[in-house]
Length: 385
Image (cartoon, rainbow, N blue to C red; front, top):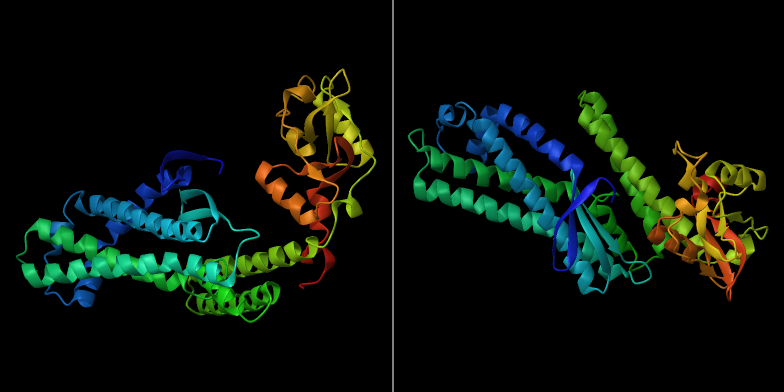
């Protein structure tokens, strides 16, 4: 993922940190620290303690340091949530490319294409929430133990109060994460759990459609509640859920459709070539005149040395001096004539390109682009499968 740095690996899975993570630490620290009076009251109610001396926790920079500690512990819990997904996916033979910690949680990049079953999807999806539930119960148990063994009260020393605050708050937050992720709506884990269960009886397409529709119902409920209570966060969650449900259904319908389409049925056979010495301005003009989004690049001997697309040119300011040979990677890859559009889409995703050559032996017989694939999407055709 762009705008992230690798900080290590666990169980062979690269772990990356998105720059937004660094931005959110001080923000969360301030928000949590500023709300410490309410939080302590909540902890007293949940764990049944006597009235605690809030002045010790609220003195000076203590609340903000506690906010930072809670934030870091929460993201550690989110990381364990994501690793639970990854380890379960690996157990079912799926490849895990990386885990990225970012602004509002984490993303596990799991490659389960072609090998996903209802059972594997169910257990991979539910493993994350179960990890959050376990962390929540364990943290809450420690908080209850502190209440029982240290007899927390208004006279309790600061170290006891800090430990109770950290474990008690983490217990509540992780239980909330468990409940939120179990909502049966994409893109939350609950949506995938529901699809895994539905796929035991129905096709993946129908299961996705049903789970997507249920997710949209929850989105409407969140939106109505947000409007009634004037809660902007609920409205944002509603939008997040609605768009996630729509996108998941669209991608599933698209994937199923293009599995039956050969690249040779839709490819552009009028292949335009550009030389490696051509400027990017000339390349762009050639692509526009040919009405294509990419083409092969050849050298002086007429050998193909790479591919270039309009996306390689867009946004550059040196198009008059930079040549095609200066922006291509030099890697030559493509799909064979018997490949499907689904195969092409997977390769485009892996290689992060938008145009692929179609080979018959060593000869390029056509080009296939992401635009050709998107023509089969529900949004383009006006149907939802």
